[in-house]
Image (cartoon, rainbow, N blue to C red; front, side):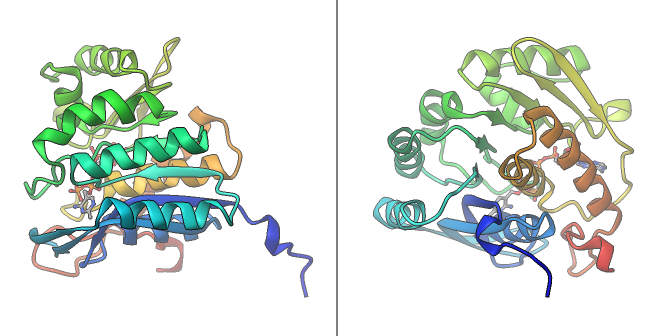
Length: 270
Ligand SMILES: Nc1ncnc2c1ncn2[C@@H]1O[C@H](COP(=O)(O)OP(=O)(O)O)[C@@H](O)[C@H]1O
Ligand SMILES: Cc1ncc(COP(=O)(O)OP(=O)(O)O)c(N)n1
């Protein structure tokens, strides 16, 4: 027997949608938490019927169901960090923001999921303003991709300087730090991410992996950041290590459908 103390295992929470194909959303987040030896709790916001080709249906959970899942976990367990993913509509965004304020939560990673790479809308138009006004200001780290950053910062992003300007604009919305993800950038900027914490910029660059199996990269990154925060790592270190994790997982992307397969979350076991 080892002297493992199970009561001290770090706990993280994902507030996100279900992906029936298992590549993104809650499923990707919980696998990522497990990889980091962090116990994963989950608040389901919606159920997507989804595979590697796209999303065919979305069913929302009620705000009451979201509240009940959240409160039931929070009153019982010491959740060290939370990530938000697909929140779908304005009511759910408002509900989640209200609960974060009520519980005085600090280690919050907001992945402002709006559109999937296959083109499906994952956040109602009406919810975008609420996300900007209520949720982004509560983020310790906000992690928009190129398109989400363009919407939040109200500008086009083509260059590294654009990424930096957008990060500053989103920081001004109230996030304590911003990571603009570069999976959708082109040329030399492909997979280059930009971090800004109000003080300093950092450019995070790993090798760009040549693969079509990128489904769930954003979910995986934000979940890995949350796991690292739950493990007590400083914010920028949490981001750096999460970026390295996604890069390795992308090398082991799974060709399991006719479209964009998920990343290999459990790559060391493959
Ligand atoms: N082909 C790739 N090679 C290496 N890293 C990638 C690749 N595509 C995306 N990434 C990385 O995956 C993370 C998620 O980014 P991105 O794909 O832009 O987010 P989203 O899935 O939200 O659109 C970022 O760290 C990004 O740099
Ligand atoms: C249920 C659900 N949540 C989030 C996403 C988007 O996933 P993400 O990792 O941001 O990006 P892509 O997989 O679309 O590249 C999703 N598709 N489903």
